[in-house]
Image (cartoon, rainbow, N blue to C red):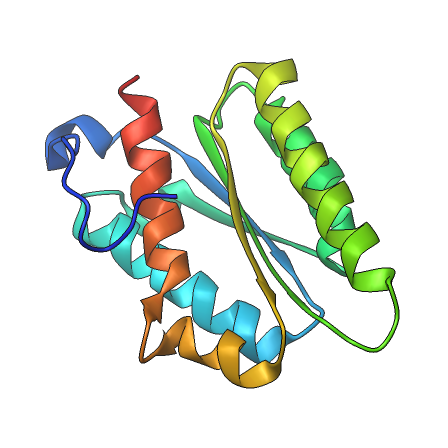
Length: 155
């Protein structure tokens, strides 16, 4: 994802007015994922994407983001997909398996469809780190995911 301080060419507002974005949001850790979603939507709107062209789809958890992202990317009228989730490390290796599977699955969705399917998944050691990246002291990674989607449409 593009960082908040990274420069890059962003499409003009008028060129985004006809683009449709799907945002697939994991319900698990929903206070975090909702904040990321709101950041993504605000960024898309600021760049000229009409609200009617932003479609939200929910999946149970981050593991399901890969399939949700792929299914949305396969739709003809969707130009880019943003996958939003949050995986917080616990006491077992489950965290590692989920993070690896989600990263691989979203990569495959990009390659299989040729459309941008953006990895907007926080993988943190604790809840505080997630909060810091969902509108806290390190910004909102949902905003960064939206900027990545916009930039990849121009690739």
